[in-house]
Image (cartoon, rainbow, N blue to C red; front, top):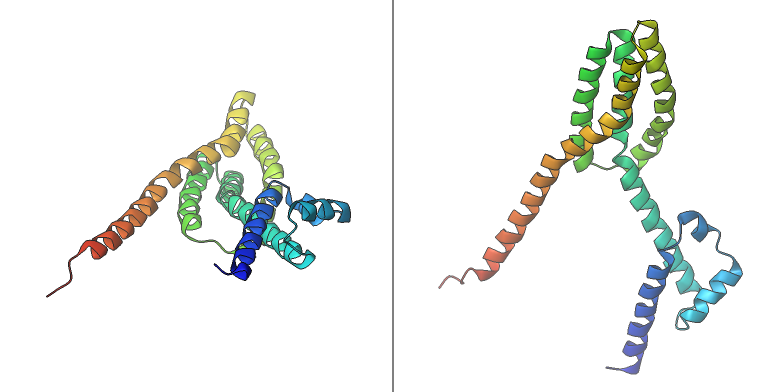
Length: 199
């Protein structure tokens, strides 16, 4: 292999090692890396220049942000289900709230497994801040309707933890379907390779 190719391969490998090292940092730490920290990292990877370092840093920050958004995206059905449960309980009764909350949770879990939109994520991620006052509102409404403290605690606990648990259960069949589709595609590709050519 020519020397230039070997050097390029070594530089690429150092870029990968730097990316692995940077991935251990939090996004906030990566965004505030001091010149001294950058210099220390560049000393560990001598084949990389400042331009390559900044490029790897930018890619790692973007990858970590994307990963955080995907995780946050999976929490949105829970937040919407809590808000719907509380809204329907306030407007009608607790039973209607629970039914509506479960229905919207299962529907959104199905959709959010197949669809992800970064632009849509940013406004929807703010819903989490509305769930905290929603729990307090639910407790207050149930108290005003004469529910005992035990029932109020159980209802708030269900609105919080029950929706997380039901959301995880709703994802199981969807994940099984997605895994089955992946395996079917792999098996189909394998069979096409093994199929003898027509004579």
